[in-house]
View 1 (tube, rainbow, N blue to C red):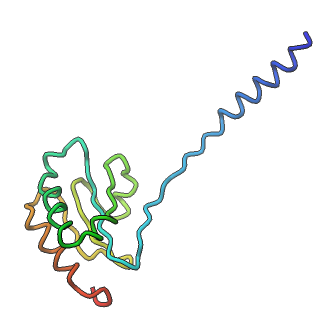
View 2 (view 1 turned 135 degrees about the vertical axis):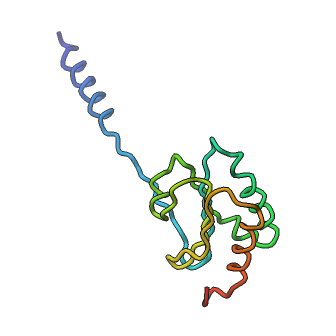
View 3 (view 1 turned 90 degrees about the horizontal axis):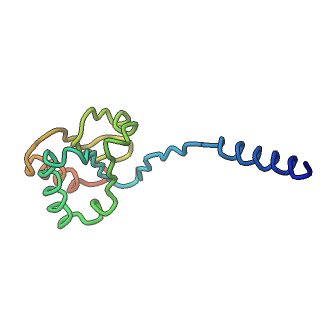
Length: 128
């Protein structure tokens, strides 16, 4: 009987501590002072994204900082898709100062990914 209050308090603490599930929603942190590349991917459909992977590899040669700071968003993080009006993966966006400079969606060739991104990257940051 003496251990019953201790057991009840312990059980109560255990139950109340397990009820405190706060989901920490990670916000997509975009540095507005630089051009930022955002790649939306669906791991289940990687065959459709091969041209994107090839383009990213090629862009890394000319713009290593752009690729180093690239944000990758999976289909599981669907809340970010709606932030940029992306309905399906794959997609790649180049954003600067809260503006989308380049938007490429769907299955496209490597050159159709590289050319507009390279052109936008070569423009001055003051006048995108």
